[in-house]
Image (tube, rainbow, N blue to C red; front, side, top):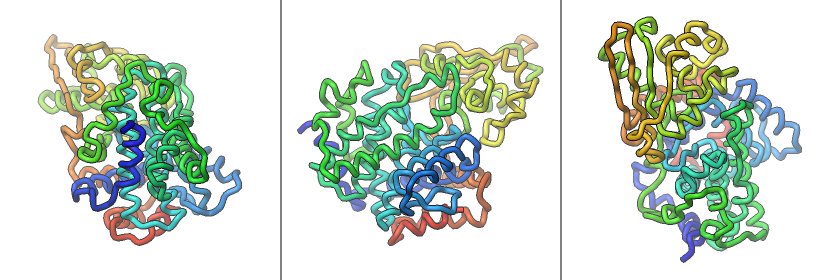
Length: 451
């Protein structure tokens, strides 16, 4: 059986009864995490543009935008919510794919389920299917696609959102083959922003989420696509020099991506998290201040050198969240990398800026050997008194090897959502997600998301 056909049959055939209680709980955790992010960051100025754009379109009132009183078309809701979900570097990660499935799959699935009045079990099925396809296809493309300049979230994203949307739309395996193939034509997104800035990268989740809905709808209407899109010589492998399609079907239906997701602790690029944890570990055993430090050297993978090691003096919040030396200076001077630490005031803080000049990132062979399956880091702190402390972190907090507790996950969700929603109102979101499998119509969830 071809890879594309195997994936299509898996998606079309997946049922709620195939999922263990653990998988169901993990899926709801990811949904809650993503919704909290959408709510919390919906008022950021660069994201309000997404709302202005979708409201300027001719819309049927089908699906909700987080924090907005209006309903718009399902495609437009997925676009706006996906932009929110990826708009502040807090969204979940599937490390082997180097991609963020949450802001792609969850907005697409919820928009279609809300439009069609489907139940919570169907939403959970769709989210599982979407994470599975996006994660596995992204893994097959990685890490080469990123070195070539493609952003994994928007490059593999439509493959996940089309699986979720097509599942909810009831596409059979034959139609799903075409839906997946069509969605590949929406796979794109480049990363020059890491070098010269710009906010468009924050919209990549929304672009991928809406593209999958469009592809599923076109397949449902009868549009066809190449049935060998996942294995053919000119299919999605065109984005990678090291394409490994065998990982797409390896243990498909037995091992699930939703069980191996990294929930971010910090509001920063993922390459920064392990070094930030290492700093905390060092400071726990030897308390210190910025004035006590002569130099910090971060050992990272080669991609981290390219992505977060090259922005030495960020000019905006996006660059701030993608700068290793500024992030660790923030960690030490302000004692945190949480969402509320990434402000214009901290970006311009002279103490942070001066200390950042003493922090350097270099390739570490051991850390590099783990990539992309694990994104670790080594930190070496040289103190002014001549002493040295070093810490190697293989699994940062929130990864499958060092997961957050249920209490930590909920605390993160509450803290992030509090930027734009009252605690009492967010309690209703939590309650809705926790009881999702018993919800007859997910429009109930959409109602509590709208502001």
